Length: 159
Image (cartoon, rainbow, N blue to C red; front, side, top):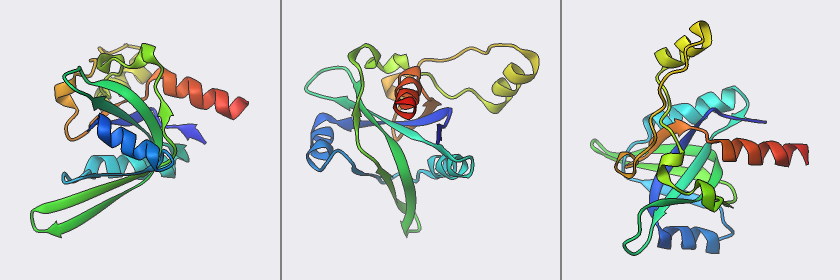
């Protein structure tokens, strides 16, 4: 299976990462925000027979946020609890550690708009890529899948 050109980035506490790692390194991430677009992205990826990555950035004791782990999303469930309360549940596979050279938040860029991507494809014009900032992650960010994920998944397929 190929990897989607896009990924989801979320910001969690270091404690949440440690908890996920204690339970076999896979599990669920829950949010009270409806992940409607993320749900559409996973559906599209599955139709294309590709996998949608999720990258976890974490914050610990006064430090800047940094990427710590990533995984592949298995599914996203949206639950409407009441008329204005939601719960999104993201199920993912085993966590993989992010290499320290890729841990800075700005090492990942926002997903370019469909118009920008169309211009790149049809006109050969490379559009501006905007690095992600910590303040843009909540509740999640949609970004281009970074090279470190593409390289790691490619090498695991070949190996």
